[in-house]
Image (cartoon, rainbow, N blue to C red; front, side, top):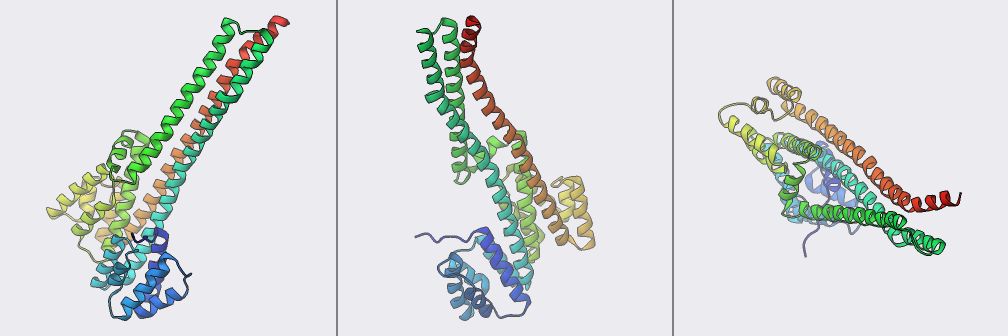
Length: 347
């Protein structure tokens, strides 16, 4: 049976708690025991802490104990190991807590941004289904009872309403199927297919690149805090991006670093960041505050990604609402026109 992984929020909470205990000078086995005593029974982290307590009491390092549990991401285990080797475990744990907390926040925002349009699409499909099965047949029956049979022009209106509703329903169902298929591919091994399609849509392409830069900057900050060399940190951080244009720019930066350029200079020359961010990075490297500048950039990029997602939701919300009102309005107008014609004839 596959071991269930700890979610991002759980990893963040664990790393922050361990970092505070390391700062307080508490022994590793005692720190794990203290964390275990405050956890609910039967949870993923509770089971992992039991294993970790056994491992740390046997004298094994924190990273080895985390790996044995199988509940922590490989990235977190590797960073903790690097921090132990460099003597910067406390810094790395705090960085990991920050990294996974931001990842969780961004994941929740993206999830909500996807769920709302899907919910709106389901409502539109439901309304169209009601129109086709109940509303339009009811109008048709009323007209036939009043006139015996519909006139050619009246029948054309009703037929148009039926055709419009069926066409709109087919389009909405195809969109929902496309979203579901895209979600499956995104979480599987065909993620590049979805990225290539979204990359052709300007709004989505900007969001994908911004998310890629956010993940890269957050990972790079953590790698550097663990004491990794800059070129290794760049190469490993690029694996967290999942965006081809950003990966290509990072690759060019790594090539420049191989020629002797610093990380900030290479990023600035290859326009990895926006010019204002690139200058911030240059100033941070020259002043010896590269890590703190990267943390600031991570915050700025996180806010930028959130703003882009909110903007996209702000576009999709009125668009779907407009489609719903337009579809229902035109359909009702089509079936009401014969009634208006009969009322005028009577009048």
